Length: 151
Image 1 (tube, rainbow, N blue to C red):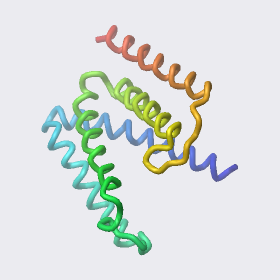
Image 2 (cartoon, one colour; image 1 turned 180 degrees about the horizontal axis):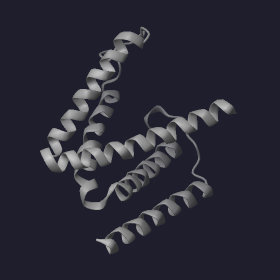
Image 3 (spheres, helix red, strand yellow; image 1 turned 135 degrees about the horizontal axis):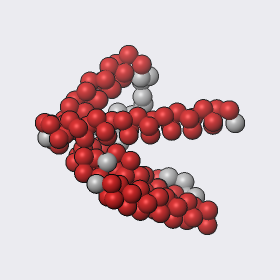
Image 4 (cartoon, rainbow, N blue to C red; image 1 turned 90 degrees about the vertical axis):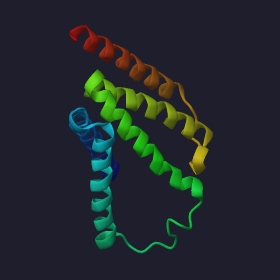
C-alpha cells in the first residue's frame, strides 16, 4: 500500500512539473515562437533521455525497430501536446490549459480503459468515474469563466 501511495505522489509531482513546463514554455513561445519553443523542449529531452539510456537503461530483448509500428505513433502525440500548450497557455492561462488537458486525458483514458483499446486491460466505466468526469468538466467551466471575468 505504501508503494502505491509513493507512486501516486510521484505522479502528482510529475503533473505539477508539467504545469511549470507549460507556463515556462508559454512565455518562451510568445518570445521566440511556438515551434522554436517546442523544438527546444524536444532537443533537450532527447539529449537527456539519450544519456539516461546510455548510462542507466538495461538491455532490452526488443528494439524500437522491432515493435509494431503503431506503437511508435505515440511519439507524434507529444508534439501535438507541446505545440497546443505553448500556444494556449498565454491565451487562457496555465491553470485552464492544464485542466482542459486533464479533461481530455481523463475522457480518453476512460474510453481506453472501458474498451481495452491499444492492448490495455479493460476496466469497466463505473458511475463514480462518470461523476468524476462531470466534476472535472464543471471545474474547467468554472475556472475558464473566472479567468475570462478577470481579463
